[in-house]
Amino acid sequence: MAEQVRLIDPRKVKRNPENPRLIFRQKELDALRESIAEQGILVPLAVYGGPRTFYLLDGERRWRCAIKLGLSSVPVIIQPKPGRLQNIMMMFAIHNARTDWDPLPAALKLQEIEKLFETRNGRMPKEAELAGLASLTRGEVRRLKKLLSLPQSEQQELLEELEKPASQQEITVDQVLEATKGAQALRKKGVVTSRQEVRLRRALIAKFRSGVIKNTVAPRKLARIARGVERGEVSLSTAQTVINKLMKTATYSIEDAFKQSVEQADFEHGLEQLATRLLTKLEEHERRGYKPSDDLMSLLRQIARRLNRYKR
Image (cartoon, rainbow, N blue to C red):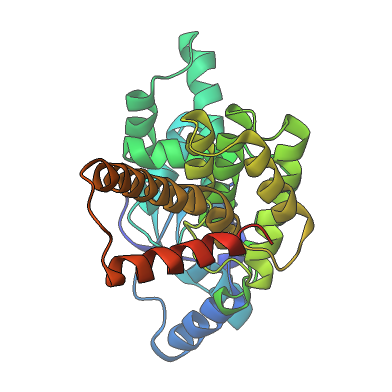
């Protein structure tokens, strides 16, 4: 059972080494510190350990502010010391409803839960088991595990980005994930090589940063290009041409690539169907021995002039 609320010196408290939360934005800390300076700490910290050293289970931001303000005591509720797996599970359970928890640090800690479970049980946890251990949905687990598949360099880049105030962030976790999925789709259909997949992903992230790509889900159109190649709607050479341009030209967007491949193919397919129907109708008109009216001849001459432009 938890003890009653006690007052202890915040300098005796240390952060929980298993807390997945690594990023504490200064603007948010400043606002909380002002509130604590005026009203004090209204919600006790949850800790374990003692009597000389305590470790946080919940309340790291309040603790940081208390240290900054030089408070001599903070209210705490002392919990029994948990085992390492239980500790990480408690961290997830405490924070799982908080929208300000950054996903990449959580993904890294989720990986530790998997390893601890494997050590204890001799096998990796199933998705449902992992979701239960972390107090997450299976969809949230899948999203976090996708982050773990990113190269270390991009994980580090994301961590550095997440440390900035939200207004100054140029790239988000979702944008990186969408760029990754789009590049993977093209590689799986043979449009790009594995090496080009990496180049394309980096190019897409750079375009998100520069604002050339504004819509987070825009890379999903790359999967549409990949399917177009698979279905024969777009030639492989056309797809490779637009993707190479996407990698090399800073101002060239996914929308441009889509228009010059799938969208153009769709439009031309419709045009082919109309042209086929027109030829069929003209042949039937000739078989019936009809004399073309002046209006029909005028339209046919316009079509002929338009067709001549394609020769230029």
